[in-house]
Amino acid sequence: MARLPLLAGNWKMNLDHVEATGVVQKLAWSLADYHYDKEKAEAAVIVPFTDIRTVQLLIEGDKLPIAYGAQDVSVHDAGAYTGEVDAQMLAKLSCAYVTVGHSERREYHGETDEIINAKAKKVIEYGMTPIICVGEKLEIRREGTHVPFVLAQIDGVLAGLTAEQVGALVIAYEPVWAIGTGEVATPADAQEVCGAIRVRVSELLGADAAAKVRIQYGGSVKSSNVVDIMAQPDVDGALVGGAALDPAEFARIVTYYAR
Image (tube, rainbow, N blue to C red; front, side, top):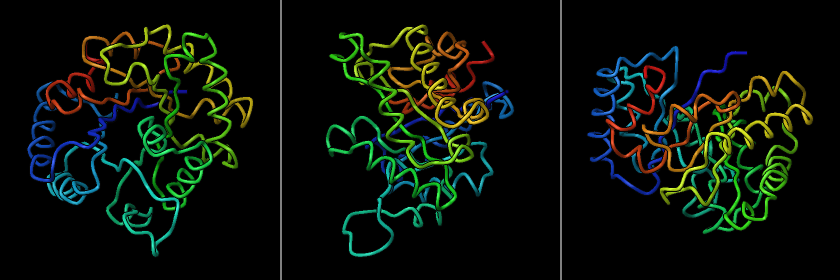
């Protein structure tokens, strides 16, 4: 089954709403320069909450071929939860995607698989697509237990979701030791875990869900390594960090198929 690759740029806590305007405009120009074909890959930017409205107006107003989304969501609906942002608010801003369970949320905010599962369900409830992040730290990789560790995360974050729901969402495998370090898993490393995730989805929810779910690799992805990573049969895109802040570089990543 053909799965449209998703190349999503996670801006993290970077770029205010004014800077966001320039970056999105330059990204659109760069995609045009590299003859971006939305039938071959999907480009998305995952932006800070304060940038979403600006990015929405620019993308919708200029009809740019770029999807956008948020970096987190509350497990709660609207109410007395100061500082939280609920899924309905993001849906009203027409977000296509919401990342949940990024390793930085797990490490700095103590998010568990159960919390991430609840967030994913909220995103789905309001008609958006969660990008559910999983991945191991360096000590787990060194122990050689990274595959069972990640599969245990998959069991937790997908609990209670239907085959149809899982087939429509995105899973991002991000080895924590490769995020922002300049270290990158080899294409074989990425395929090992992404392939194992697809097998586990098949075991949990059936072959159809496994064939449909998009599985990204994330961790120091750049234009110089994305082609080999994307050549792997179970890698359906990339969740890009630092390189996504450079519009021309991110455009080269998105248009990997042209090289």
